[in-house]
Length: 138
Image 1 (cartoon, rainbow, N blue to C red):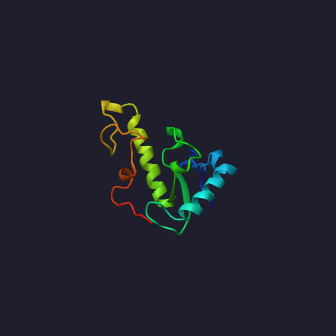
Image 2: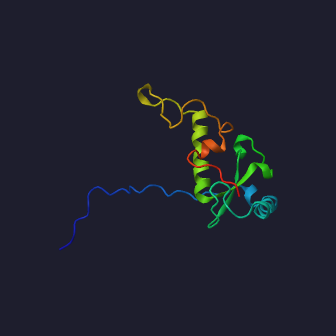
Image 3: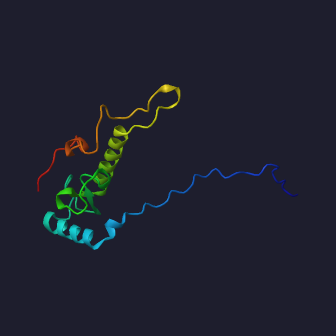
């Protein structure tokens, strides 16, 4: 016995694949790599927030480049582990969303955010990024 084919063809409902994030060309430059080597030598290969030394350590701009931060200034780069880097990046994106809120949604209600007041990316401090932990000194 032969199976019947459907009269209406099935459509794929898969979500489009997420493209890989491509790092900005600055992070592949010799100048950035030499800055990172210098910071690892001076500060050690550990997270400047939580002190974690296992795993990958990221060079993170304190004031992001899109917010006007200096690209190759050692005072604008902090060394963070993956989890602290992800948390800080999410906070910066949220702060940027608050500074430039999206248009109102249907029904006239504005999109809600977790932050109150007008917070700019430049106005956030380390204490606001990581309020639950005290800064450790090494």
